[in-house]
Length: 179
Image 1 (cartoon, helix red, strand yellow):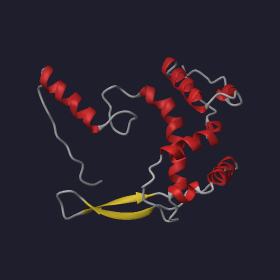
Image 2 (cartoon, one colour):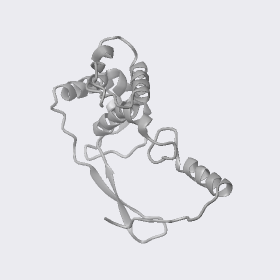
Image 3 (cartoon, one colour):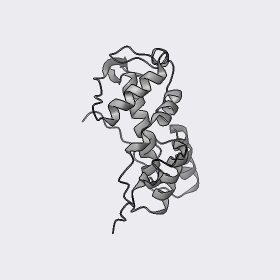
Image 4 (cartoon, helix red, strand yellow):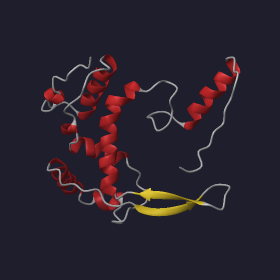
């Protein structure tokens, strides 16, 4: 049976910092795995986006709009206000990504990179923060890909410890070439 939300908007107008709200949501998701969150969009607010802005790399490549972090920062308050207005009116439209090809290491082939516009990076970062608070609790400890505070080095260390300390019957290496 899936638990039904008593509306997570109880934290909506509470005046709590967004970090506190995200921690409370993460704790609820951890304690009640079947809980259904029905109202999280209000968390996409100026405080969250401002925090995401601070975390974005200053030297990141610009998208098709050629907007850099420094350029966006020149009118940060107005830019965030305008972005939030578009998001909450549901008229925000992500821009096409800029496609760039970079060489594959050890090969003559190239791999494509999709470089989003700065505002798209900001919105994506905000959504990641909100969704991580709900779904991070569901991942198993042995999962390392694209998770906060985990790296490929952590995965290699765990693999090394397993191979050295536990009985192993098979090791399989796989590489998905193209699909």
